[in-house]
Image 1 (cartoon, rainbow, N blue to C red):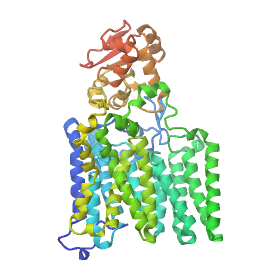
Image 2: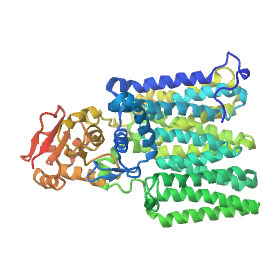
Image 3: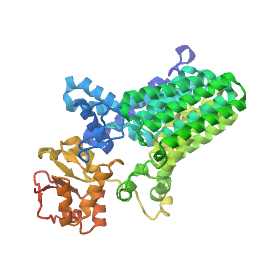
Image 4: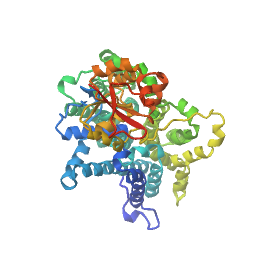
Amino acid sequence: MSPLVPPTGQRSTAEPKPAIVLALAWATIVVALGLPAIKAGVFDTLSTDDALRLVEVRDLLAGQGWFDLTQYRLDPPGIAMHWSRIVDAPLAMLILLFRPLLGQHHAEALTLVLWPSLLMGAVLWLAASIASQAGAPADRPRTQLAAILVTALSIPALIHFRAGAIDHHNLQIVLLLGFVLCICDLEHRAAKAAWAGFLAALSLSIGLEMLPAIAMASAAVVGLLVWKGNDVLRPACAFGAGLAGSSLLLALLLLPMNSLHTPVCDAFGGPILLLCAGGGVALLAIAGVSRLHAGLWTRLVASALAGALLLGAFFKSYPSCVASPYAQVDPQLVSFWLGRVVETMPVTELAQMQPQKLLGYYAFPLLTLGLCVAAMIGCAPQTRFRWIVSTITLATLFGESLWELRGAAAANIVAAPLCVAGIVRLHTNVVAGWRLVRVALLVSPATLGGIGLAVWPALAAGTGGSKIAMPDPVASCQTISSAAPLAGLPPGRVMAPIDSGPAILAATEHSVFAGPYHRNNDGNLVLLHTMTETPDAARELLRARQVDYILTCNGSFDQDDLVRIAPEGLAAHLGRGDAPDYLERVQAVSKPGWTVWRVRK
């Protein structure tokens, strides 16, 4: 791994110092992303996923089992979440570290600020290291400097590093950058190959968002082994062993033994374990064949056979995992809830609603892809695999971002160091002076996004005026402080808007039915059916589910949609203040815009 700063003797005092720039960029980002937390309080900056992650960490600290991922207060008697203890563990340790000195509340607050800030520093360092691999040692300071600045301007990804961001996306971005750093140098260093296998397995044990990119990069390693044979035998074996061994160890760490064969398609489990461990073993088998028979066609046949056996075993054992990751979401909930989740929006919808943001999300990774392809074509043979695997990984991430907007964050931040490396590779004379930095800043995501916003008036003419609705977290009852008054009521079961559920869980001891999670079909359908029924019919549903309280929020999307679906349903009646006789308004916790109703028993 290239050092961030070369020895002093290799650099004149007039040259930039990447370590200082990294520290300044990191401090600037941390302060800028922390301003909302300073203004509103860090707990009110939590997204719905951040809030439920905090609840999950609290449950772990309170004694809930390591292997027990059930959220018992979500759609009681509970929902088994698809999240990973890999993220819970460091958060819990930080809270335990600070709690004796600061108390529980302030220990949590400090952790909410410190965790994403540390990860942002890791991102900047990894980006500088990736970019420095492409240039000559004498050019590394300027290359690292440019990579740090472009990464700091990767606007689509920075939201995952704001104060309060304790969801898994920021850690996955860090692991992906580490994976790219190691796999790009796989051909020359077996140790990095083993680390790449470990980081791939660790990322997949947290979530499956990076699965396509990791799978395609792993396929590139197989292609390298087939093409070069015994010349890359050692790093290929190291990667395969690292992938297989790490996935098996992580399975023992994270999964109960009786669940290893469970067809869990949305999280680390039997299917992913089969792909990771089986893929690593398959790579070792191909390497063994190459050792015995060095012919190209022999390796090609062996890889085809190993791949067919692995995929055949996967499709035979877990056919349900071939479907869309959202296939289990009830069709009623797709239109009522999932369809309005911005991060699941494809590029076609974004182009219709907010075309001014297309350049900010997609132009930079697309430009970098062109640079990578050009560098791959014109590079020396000893560096060709580096550009091949970089191009494949970035192309896969870009494809994901076209399918779901959430993929744009990883695509942009991985593209940042690759863009700088591509510029250095194609135009070595640009490195001199500050030209590399100026060129890199000119094509950064922030610059391209600004251009898109500047030309918005011209683009707006053909959009018909449609917009992406972005709710105010306070008005839509999503903040922890807005849910805090409910803590004064005796613990009970609360029927509230979908996006209010995590805040209620974090701020109170109540249970909720609805929450923005694809596994929560039952609880979300209970909300939908109960609130769209007539008041008389809803009474029986409330009684069957033993509901204690109803929260109506006039600023939430749910309320608007429920009224639209059923103008005479329970939600519409409550929105007008027309409550049936079995509901009693709780004046002590009701506020303008939202109301709490107690269900009379």
